[in-house]
Amino acid sequence: MKKLLHPAITRGSANYGWLRANYSFSFANYYNPERIQFGQLRVLNDDYVAPAMGFGKHPHDNMEIVTIPFTGALRHKDSMGNEGVIRAGDIQVMSAGSGVEHSEQNDSTTEAVTLFQIWVFPDTENVSPRYDQKQIAPLLRPNQFSTVVKPKSEAEQGDLWIHQQAYFKVGDFSEKTEITYQLHNKNQGIYLMVIDGTFFVENETLNSRDAIGIWDTSTVTVTAEKGSKALLIEVPMN
Image 1 (cartoon, helix red, strand yellow):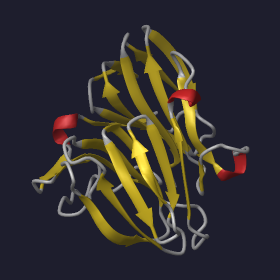
Image 2: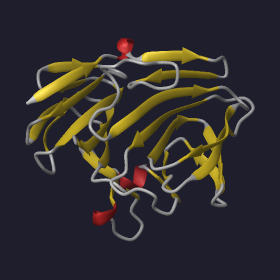
Image 3: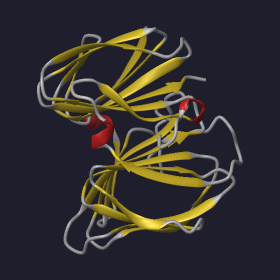
Image 4: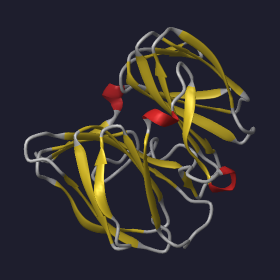
């Protein structure tokens, strides 16, 4: 088993006034040669967007982009003709594929938006761009890690999916719980980011916004304290 720790205080950061960002991996003006990516996980940004502000129209290609707001709401508009609002409790998936332009603006003039934006490298390039979103709560089962995004090859009608052998799982624990997480194959790894509370992962203690990456193993032991919540992303390591 191999592992790396990313305590919250060691993340990169930026403050543009309207945007306050914390970067798990090198992004924009933050560059750390030891934190370029984790396997096929390229970006995990923890953002605060001020009221009435946001990201203007900009392009992406060949990237799977997942957005999870925690407070507030974002208004999404893209060159595929999609327009709508992503609210706290929703999860949005966009395959940039052969190329797409989009904007994400805070939909409120009084309330900030906080969110994770996550990028995963695709396993197939230049696909047709696509967009989808769902509410997270109906996807969750109590006191376990529930899959909210899965690979296209495993998706059924109504599932959120991406062009990669990756799994996004949310764990919301109302009781102290120990889990032995089984990875899908030996070439996968997990990156666990604590949203709230405390987790014990393979003899490491993690609190809010701490993260750990683990690979070269078939199972990972995770203990969640009561009232804790985390995002677990399983990705290919090569």
